[in-house]
Amino acid sequence: MTEIKTDFLLSIIIPAYNEKATIRELLETVITTPYTKEIIVVDDWSVDGTRDILLKINHPEIKVVLHEKNIGKGGAIRTGLELVSGDYVLIQDADLEYDPSEYHVLLKPLISGRADVVYGSRFAGHGAHRVLYFWHYVGNKFLTLLSNVFTDLNLTDMETCYKVFTKEALKGIRINESRFGFEPEITAKIAKKRLRIYEVPVSYYGRTYEDGKKIDWKDGVWALWCIIRYNLLP
Image 1 (spheres, rainbow, N blue to C red):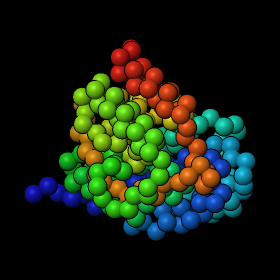
Image 2: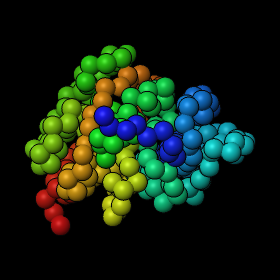
Image 3: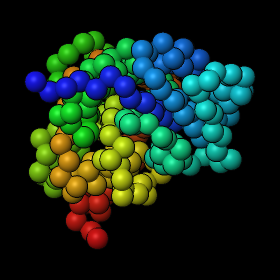
Image 4: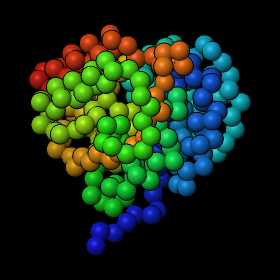
């Protein structure tokens, strides 16, 4: 029987940009998760009051980093990766589209020693899934399919926020992309390392643009380029 690891440090990177409506609730939920953890919140030059909320937070598990200009989600994750010290590194968006109460689902393949990387799939048939934009769904499936063609993986959701890595899996990986190109870039790079990659189903409480959703068609076009760049070019 595979031994389950119980003594570990979980590093949680939270990129945040203009998430005043959700950042406080999100952090309260993350804090309650039953793990020894460090929470690294990277504010990417929010202008809606998000950083005012973050500057008032005083909690031993939370470290707040403030960008002096807006870089993008990938840039915020890159900043967070430079500061992590945990055995596992988890990416958590600040918008409450993904539920921290499902960390145990994401971590199980890792702490059992079976996986080096775990993706939380929105399309694997588990939990609540808000019904929203058809063309976003089509775009996600197309980008995942194209990524799979080049990586020879069989992921169902390459673009998911929920990605968890062992610290060893991230060694030697340098992130170049500063916006949403992070997703195809990191997928290409972990595929080239031939790591043990697992997918688990997660719930998805998607937002509308009126709620503050930020990704658009231009990010999809850039993701297409990133798939080609990081899989085919040196």
